[in-house]
Length: 277
Image (cartoon, rainbow, N blue to C red):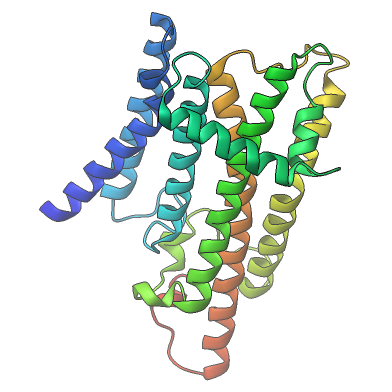
């Protein structure tokens, strides 16, 4: 019990740290911004604490199937930290911030191809944006997008080499997929595969559709210019992280469908892997 609560407390602290990181690292933020950030960080920490401290399913999917959520959290942490460091280079440059800027610029140039997600995001900026600001947004987008692709690739490697989620023991569908009702609708395997394909399709299309949608809405609303460092950090992080997260969720649900189908064909008595399925 003590070790479990220690791990839960550590997770909560890490979530709060990620949320508060830009406000802690960036200078010149007002007291209102810091208070709002602190409130959101405390809320995220409490949600994480009660979610992982409970033995019953809640809102977090694949809670007991590491390293699914760990990979996503590390990708989120890396994206927020590197983009915050990149923003620091514009006001208080250091050796680390200059290295991040140079590396990110090189990565962004290599993937800034016609019709690529990075190019579409840059085209979303207002026409009067300065070349320096365009370069900054391109670099941030390139860094965040490469991090999301790396996390996705690492998860696929874990899936293939370690046989996730069997490598971590029994897989309980009720706990790890709390929002999925196996008793509703069609066959469980069919629904899981349908949801998996939907998530993969959304994960692939979102980086392309979001900039197009924002650019279209700019004719009615004020265009997004990313003048605020925190707005740039969180918007670009979400733009890259959410599609990768959906991609991983789709792959994971497809894997669960394969496990259930294999269990049925074997004719063995269902184990934890098929709990509530």
